[in-house]
Structures are given as C-alpha cells and as structure tokens.
Length: 259
Length: 372
Image (cartoon, rainbow over the protein chains, first blue to last red):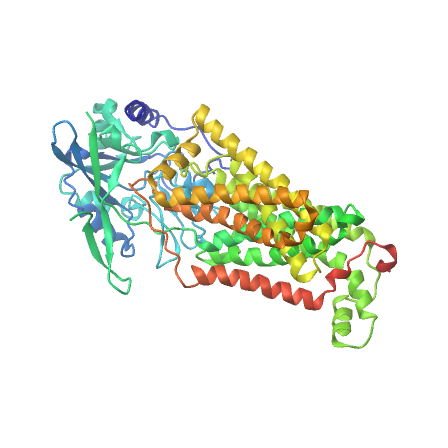
C-alpha cells in the first residue's frame, strides 16, 4: 500500500510542479474559503525557490542566517533543514537525507483565505506575507498551513513566517538563507523571466522537480531537485530526538533516543 | 527497496490554540443547545416544557455571556479584536463568525430579559426589600412587557444560533491541513455533543437549583437519547466511509490510534463513555424511579461534551503535520492552561449566581396575567 501510494504521490508531485508554471486565473470575487485578491508587490514577477538537494550538506547555515536576519525567537524557525538517517533494509547501507523546509509561497495558500482580518495576504509577486500590526494572533493560519511553516512569534504575539526575505528582495538583495548557503543549493528568482537562473534550471530539470504534499492542492512554489518521493509527504520515520529537562522541568538540551 | 528512516533533527512546535479554544467551543455549544431546549416552553408555549425552558434559558444566557470571554482570551492579541470589524474578510469562516456572534449574544440576552421581566415586575411590586428595589431597577421603567417580544427575540436568537452551529463547525472542518478535522461530519458531531452536554447541565441544575423536577429529568434524558443515537450514527457513517472508500480523516484517526497509546486510551474511553451514557439513559427512561439520579448522568453528559472538544481541538494539534511522532501537549498551570480552564468555569459560576440573585428565573410563566 505504502509503495503504491508514495509512487502515486511522487507522480502527482511532478505533475503539480508543472502545473504551477501556468499562472492561475484571477481569484477575485472570493467565495467562502476562496483566495482573496492579491495586493502589493510587482505583478510582473513571480518569485519561487528551487532547492537542489544534491548540493545541500545540512550545515544549517540557512537556519542560522535566517534566524539572525529575521530575529525569530529562540526555538522558532522560519526555515530549518530537517535531517533523517535513512537505512536501506536490504543492504544495511546508511545515508543522510537533508530536507530544507520553509514557507512554500503556494499559488493557492490555504493560510490566506482563513485570516479573519486580512492581515496575511499574498503579494502580486506570489510572496505570502503577514502584516503583524493587523494580525490579531488567532493562529487560524498556523492551523491551516499543511507545512508547519507558520508559528506564533512569542515576542510579537502575532503570526510569523518566511517572507522569502521580501525586504531584501525589494532592494535587490538575496534572501539570507540563499546568501549564506555554502553549497549554492537554494536558488531564488522570478519564474516569469525565462532567462533567470531558476527558470533555466526548472526548464532543464522539469521532470525531476518535486513539491511537498502535492495532494493538498496548494501548488507550492518551492521546488525540490534530487528529492526522494518518500519524503514528499509526512515521512514515515521514527522520531528520535527528545528534549532533556532538569528536575525543575527546565530544558537543558537534546539527546538522541537510545544513546 | 525499503527504507528505515529516523528523524534526527526537527524543531518542536508549540500548540497554537490554547485550552481557551476548548472553553469557547464548549460554552457556545451549550449556549446554542440550551437555547434550542428553551424554545418549546417559551417560544412555542407548551406548558409541559416550561420547567425545562426555565432552566435551559438560564443555562443559555449564562454560557452566552461567558463563551465570548474565552474566545477573546484565545487570541494572542485580544486588544485587537476590533480588527475583526475594521477589516472583515467575508471569505473566512472566522470572520463570518465574528459578525454572527455579537447579534447572537445580544438577541439571547434580550430573549432572556423579556422572558424574565414579568417575574421581575411581580417581585418589584412585592415590597420594599433590596431585592424588590433591584427588581424595579432591572425593569427599566414602568411599561408592559410585550408578549410577542419573547417569541420574536427567541426565534431570532434561534436563527443566529444556527449560524453559530454552522460557523463553529465549518471553521474547523475546512482545514485540509489536519485530516482529522477535515470532515463534514465534524460540525454535526459538535452540535450533537453540544446537545448532550446542555441536557446534562440542565439536569444537574434541575437537581441543584430547581427542586429536581421529574419532567425536566425525563425530557432531558430523551434529548440525550436522541443525540447519542445521532452521534452513534454519525460516527458509524464516518467510519464506514473511511473503510469503503478513501477518507483522509478516518485514515489519520486509525493511524493515530494504532501508533499512539494515548490515542488508543482516548478512543477506548470515548467509546465506553458513549455506551454507558446510552445504556443508563435507556434504563432510566424505562424505569422512572431511577430518574432522580439523572443529574449524576448529567455529569457524564457534560464530561462527554467537554472531552470531545478537548480531543478534537487539543489532542489533534499534537499530531505533527510534517515531522515524525507527536508534539507534547503540556497543560501549564497559568492562564494559558489550567487557570484558563478553571477560570472560565469560575466565571460561569459567578454569572450563574449573580443572575440567580438578581432574577426570579424560577417564576417565568406563560400565563397572560403575569405579563401585565
């Protein structure tokens, strides 16, 4: 069952990566739970990210630089690299799987229509942002995101998420995670510009690109190259890390289970 | 090739909705259910339902007053609640709910006020004690209570109650990100468990505040019987749908029960509580001499209504969306946790006692003479 299902998901992932290149028709006149109109941003652009997993070494430089750039509270992350130890049951070979996660800036972001005060919205260039001066902190968007890309920022008490570093993009800089990636695994750009690096790479590797959880119908705009389709949806993995607390219940660190 | 994957690095995610959300969903469900229970006696004026209606109205008004407080507390920025009205988002169920809730609260209070006013007038005319003085004050002047007002405001409140039922269910059920929530049966289940809890609370207060009226017990037990049978049919349909076709909701539930001992225990508890509630209700309806213990069964009914919401809103949040395993659900002692839960119930008790002191709710009567 699992193999069949996962193969199907893998195929869907490829299909959806293709479909995402076609701009969706206007979504104005929104009914209940439809996408409201986009606002702000450059409508001639559509930002997307391609993550070349073949180049990712799991160093977490992106995690750290994002944390510093965007001042997320300790323990909350706008991006992080999930790491899995993978064992081939037949041969006993062991490998490590790196999976950088961030907001997918979906074409149909489920977090946007749920917002009851229009605080979270999608810009014309596809970037999903939160106006944290309007946000009431109801956390409905946190629940609606299938990728756990959102969290309630404990300092601002409002919804927080990756913005593709829109404040940097808007002045011609690269996002912190892209700038700091030692392997050059993260490529951001405008997929409406056929000459951009991301457009060229997406054309070249079109059939090998995958997105996360395609079955959710969100049409993510973070594309993975060199992805194992078994990690496209929630991986069938054993949780292995546990936090360690002292006698007063204060967190003192992490350790691996069984070590 | 089969793989064994072990997650070695992942962040811990905090639960984004606090127990306040459970308290709101619980209070508002009891509120709209109790409102419905009050209709036969007060809006349709069936005399034999009047004792039930008196208690149900008291429950409806008190829970309607307290529910929105818990809702406000679940916002991380409660002072910004006015943003709901300054920039509404008609495509969001939560925004629709923000529009429905205030008129519902106001209509329910007006319904209660006009039902209670004739009794307030009577008490006000009965002497010079502080309670009579207070009653005269609450009458807001010397005018005749329009008989139609109870019917009109009761019917309008019931209409908005249907809106509250719809939005509280739909806002959870549309979230495809959490398969366990993403089923059309969830809103129905919220209403049915709400009816069970409201009947339970009415039966409990019947014992504590209204002299254990036998009619109220019998009518409450009948409502519980119908609601629990309805809930059983809904649960069975939901499950059979998952067995015969593909339902992500059922699949996620089965996976959780299979892999998590806590969930197995919860499922076993929910099933046995439902069966016990059903069997005891049937037994009491067949043997009226046991009905004087119905208030005890009421406690179980209240527990079911609350525990269902705890399971749906809190436990489901512990199922990781992307990562392996489950998040830790820690109920803290402070206002985000235990204090919030107890505080909501404490506030409700305070409101109940204040209304009990101020309003002669036991004397609500449909007789024309009492409405001069």
